[in-house]
Image 1 (cartoon, rainbow, N blue to C red):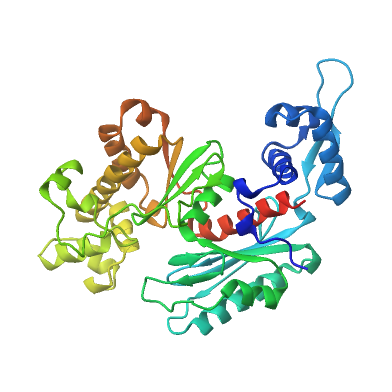
Image 2 (cartoon, rainbow, N blue to C red; image 1 turned 90 degrees about the vertical axis):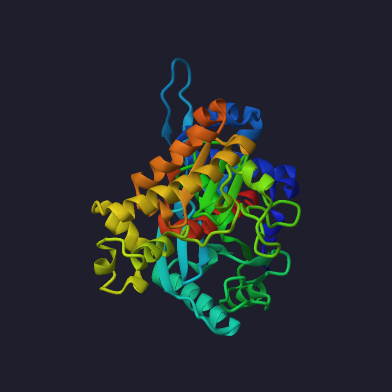
Length: 409
């Protein structure tokens, strides 16, 4: 029988026991080796309760006792650590161009990874690719099937988390079929679906660049923002929170008053492509006669200039490429400055591929945040590149299954 779907295991749905399971196991995962006494102090639960729960986890094999801690006097406390090989989980990134599956242990370390191009035609082909990749990581890892705890899929589009369907808005095959049900039937594992940006945000908070803060924003290029508030994904009233642009294409240009509110720059409001418009700017400039190495790096065809081409040229000192990257960072920085003022986060993580631009883009972002965010909030936030990189969504998905595994322990 399948365990409860993780869509139900959000903070406001957790029972008292599930909350304590999660708090104790997460503390051991993050801070172990750790004593029962230190766990008690850390999560503010009495030592008897903590000891009872930890003893139960030891019986299950989730936690291992590992020697004695240093003591300032009296009996030396026994320290415990998470047993990362007690269970395994699967995370999937259903991306725009590729599909990636990872099988990880309970610490989020990748045991097996598989990747394939995303089919551009039918939903059936997308589902087949998903099942093939999940099968591949299971076979490659060679772990006991009884230790597999669940599958999480992160993808873009309009998601119905209850039914497990997604309607894509990127022109790629839309999945109206109950994809989670199909995978559950195939693998006999609880399967859920989540927006890619929020999934990546949870991954960075749990495993990457945001592990030491309570409130974190994950900027997925310029098109979306995943929000972690006190360790929980913020979904919004309809589960679609995170868009940081407006639908300006339907009603023409917003009024001049609205433009003035946003630094007089309408590009701060309009939706961007995932690449921040960087390759478009490069192609336009070259078409107008600008001198650059970028066409050479693209094989002599300016039409083939990609975001990666611009980043490569910028790192080699190409003036046009450097200017384009810097301006993109400034546009992104304005948007982040508003979010910093609104949310007062401890960290903003830059990901979705644009972090590959390196320090030039990051420093431009920081410059605009210092300029436009209020001083107290600007000083409190760290702005850092994604640590998980292209695996952020898949690892975030696996981290969410780990969370559910802890809660259900």
